[in-house]
View (cartoon, rainbow, N blue to C red):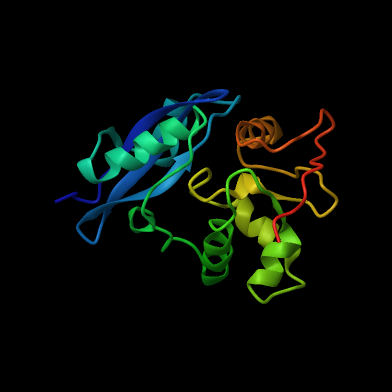
Length: 186
């Protein structure tokens, strides 16, 4: 039915265009990657480099999720089914981290060590950071809501400006030096 092909939607996002990349998985469409805008190359160049032969295409099963992402960029809450995401590409540890991260509510932040504690690996804060740095599904799995224990935003695959923008869109206070005075979600 899908023939192993990759497909993509272009997403107009804050700070530039992003993309949702999807493939057939178990005879259903599954999102395999969210590409955030980059200052270094256009979204089309990145898609061609990472997914040669990918074609722009939609699928009815994904349309509502893509619409929810677009609405999220306009200030709405995301709404989608986890069944649409393919996290089978991730290691078992990364899956645990991502599934814990998805529980963080909009407008809240937690620390890397909080995630580590919640997956019963209290000394793995750095490993959590590494797993989130490779999050293939940012925004849907809100790694931007995970910050350093000292209240600094920390790094983000879409860049620190994108992380700050996403947090501000969600109502999280971030000062000009990148400090988040918000109380952590417990």
